[in-house]
Image (cartoon, rainbow, N blue to C red; front, side, top):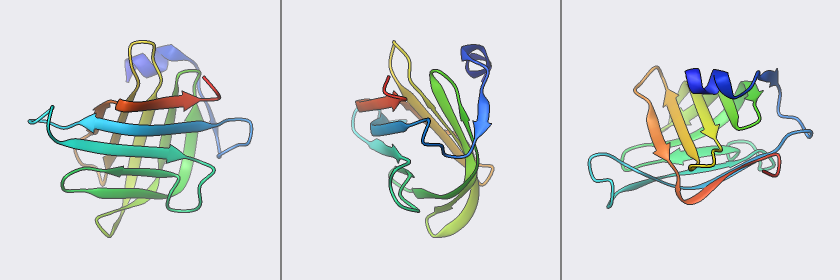
Length: 128
């Protein structure tokens, strides 16, 4: 999280036409990094329940609402309520666009963080 603070001072906004983020791709999962993949999809122009989605071998998650969205020059942090395997849960997610590779991390219902480097895809923030 120190890296996120160092990237830029964020302004907390609701989803705004002044900002855009799109992400899609796969994330390798432990312990079988090469064989089992999770997926992420972020597109704020999509309809409710489809703006932020994540799935892996045992979880299916989609965001229902955002209580805050922080926009930085190289990251976007989401806080809100979503559905994981049919259960309403609070969540925090971070999408990071970096020269060395994009990453996505999510935690819901106060559980362990999931995510990592995005493979076969990437993150675009405000056209970058």
